[in-house]
Image 1 (cartoon, rainbow, N blue to C red):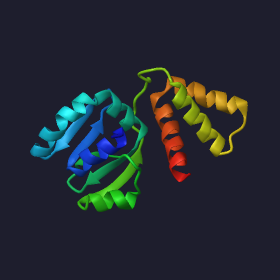
Image 2: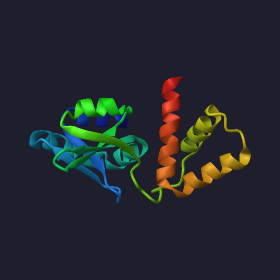
Image 3: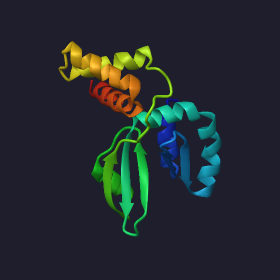
Image 4: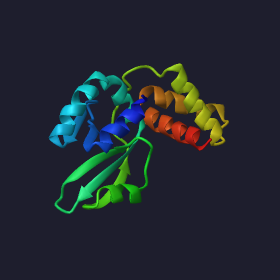
Length: 156
């Protein structure tokens, strides 16, 4: 099972998953679902943190002033998010803020980012080198580029 599929199953069981700025995973939801999924999340923490940092996020707000950060492994539209949270008054996309990458960029990540840049018509060596350099230094930039590369891959 892929990490995205695992997260989809957790979410569909009513557990809300949130990646904190410090890189930990916070779960909320029904007690029985939390008991079922907490050990699975703990056992797969490293992979799930990576998956969460690559994914699309929505900040959902409710009339009572409460809010919820929602991860959508396959990406979703604002309409889809609001349909899933009927009590919500708004949903805004956002990027989680994780400053420093936890590991150097892997060869497969580099290839994915290069493929994405190529798919959007970027051929300038200086621009490509700068994007790769930023992705080496910034986890959020790397996550953004990898999310874009995943979306391009899904189109083909």
